[in-house]
Length: 317
Image (cartoon, rainbow, N blue to C red; front, top):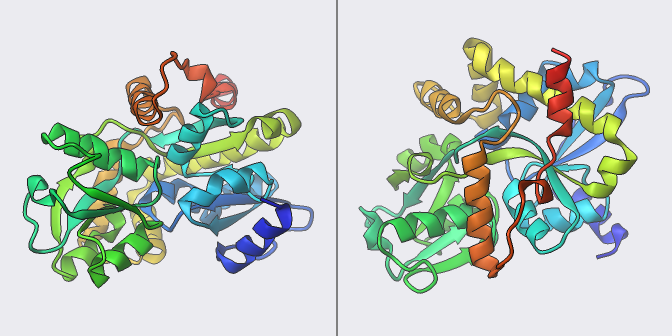
């Protein structure tokens, strides 16, 4: 797709940009699929000035999951936090690498309409995911398989978009269930939907992190190092500063009351403060993606991830 097309897309999309932070700051476009807990470390890093300290002005851009691959290739995004769809593309020969992670388990709850009370009630139902091959899609397939169902035959999977789009589809009755970021539980419970399952307890998959093109790794490794270093500060701030993190969550995620502490605890359960991805989690993601795309050959970790920036930061501590 032409670069001009993506320029127009990014203008039309929800752009979570902050004003010019200081003269000479380097602008970085960071892609998210929707506001959610999965990308909270980046919001903390923005609000605490960690990117600014690195001479960066980070502009977050919310676009549909399926567009992240092409937007990275077109240079309209510098970083994508939607790492699942990027890994799937990498296994199919696209030039991407994951350079950082922060959650080793998914922060999603499988939500269903009130008449659905258990996983097996989903047989024959419509389940919304962000896009085919995305982490929400893989989570659904793995969960159904663990409960004795065939995810390719027993349900109808629809690519709908980010969590906000999927919640809207659920509320409209066009789908019957969907995995949603736990930040949405306050809204889903008020709407009377069923919380079927916390997927982080049953699915071993990472969530959140940064993916970049291999071309960017060659052209601008210094910027990647600064982005990763600032975000890592955000990750560690999340772990060590609950009161201020909770205040950010209230404002950014629009949650209140005891939901703030509940959601914060979900984050702590999955957080990897080293900026890496647990090997078991990444291996499982590769295995599931290989099954989906019928890939036979072995896929070494180095084909999908490059930890050089995290290792350099760790060596300087």
